[in-house]
Length: 435
Image (cartoon, rainbow, N blue to C red; front, side, top):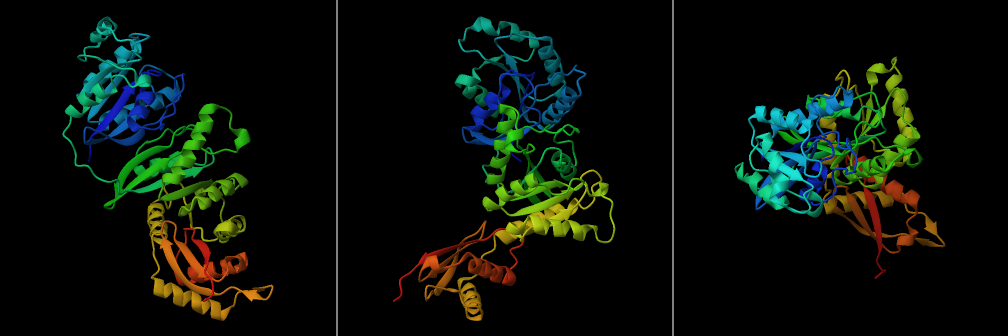
């Protein structure tokens, strides 16, 4: 395991700005108001050839009685427990506060290496750091995260605190968990991980960022990405929520598998269909997760009724795979990772060129393409040019002669011969002149 650096501090001291600078892209949401970052957010980074994981945390206020603040404090404590090095952020403009002293006392008890960072020092002078020595955490580092000043000095000190791990590619299976607000995404993530990894309340929209968590199960590496609830555009109320939705769709793009979480008590809705349609367009293998199954009154035909409704609403992707589970009770949750592995394997499968051409040649003999103005499409040969998703190129006499209904027929022939359930496949046609 490569070392973990945790960024800790009270609200609005610039932790997320520093995190984004090191990441090299905007991952954590940053706004000039406290409480925007709520969960732990991870990114893999490297400094001077030494790889590490960097984790951003919510602003910690240890003595607050607010429920959300207490949940955030729990997230910070989990980050501190797993960290190898802690960056303790303070605000050089505001100076020390009682909350800074509380956090400093807590971090000393952790027995972890703590680097004191005084952020928002745009014009450095030694006297601006004097009061921060009172925290008893050693020499403070003057930083301006916004202007990238002092960031390298902090990272130099951080990597001195741990041995360099061997650089390695992230070969984990990345699973994005998406859906509408309050569908149970974070509860499902916590159930899979076996810990309170993300904040869970009955208030929709609690998760704001797309949160990556690496873990292992049965010797396999995974990274699960919890995302913000995706509402209809006209329901998005502010900039933070807007960027949260963008993060969710970005998580879809970088995921290997996407799990759409649907609230069974509501049934699949127009917004659920819109979200999974986006997943389909991105060419991602997916699993439709029917959550809160424990709260549904059931008889012998209940699952079939739900499946029939899914088939009706998801006609554009009749290859879908579904699972009925309860994040609350744990019912069937263990099946989800196996399904994710399965649909990813299907998306990664490649048909040998000879077998593909034999299959499609037989299909054309059995059912010829329709003619158009006295001309008929001729299939010369086919090849699978890529995987994830599987993509096939057909060389024909005239690509305009391939009707969409016949293309669908060929897709069904391919799916009938090979198991591509759970993943879209794409067919492209190219024209080749008759010889």
